[in-house]
Image (cartoon, rainbow, N blue to C red):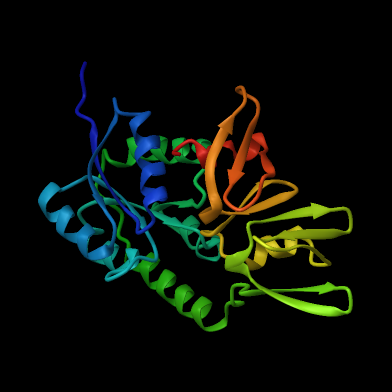
Length: 256
């Protein structure tokens, strides 16, 4: 028996993330159909009213209207999946209700689990989101008030001098024995901060860990080299070095 695909909307202000979601949904086109794609909350609301999707994938932090605001308006008429790069929103809040969430960067296995849940949930009405939205708003307020600021500068001892580098200038970070290499267009220096500490402090939407020993600036990615099914590497603008991508992080580049 042929069934009608579940109509879906995606809303995210990051083009790469919209493309990632689009690609993942396309792999399940027999069950899910992407009918609308928005780059901010206001557009998401307008497209929802015109297309009436059954499922909405909403970035929590978007211009004009946040994902939480959009969900508050449409939550009684659609099943919501929140997408976020900020794990503090997802540690326990989502587990308390039937609303699902996806952490960025989105992993294929986790996405497929979400679709499995949606196949069941769309058979019934959307859950009452009022308690969850209240909790998320309070969580967002506390995070905004007390979160550790994202790293903006890196300090490195070069000879007897202390050099300051804006993180936007960094092409990649690479673990090097007890140190971490910091490579920019003009410098290649070592710092004592571990790669793990840097990963926690950097903006996860600009800096992606692609290997246990490397974090790259997404804005510097020129192309992905596929050197067989088991080997990928990155070509970055500003350096001749190729950065290996471990299998655990292949999913980051399937949309490129």
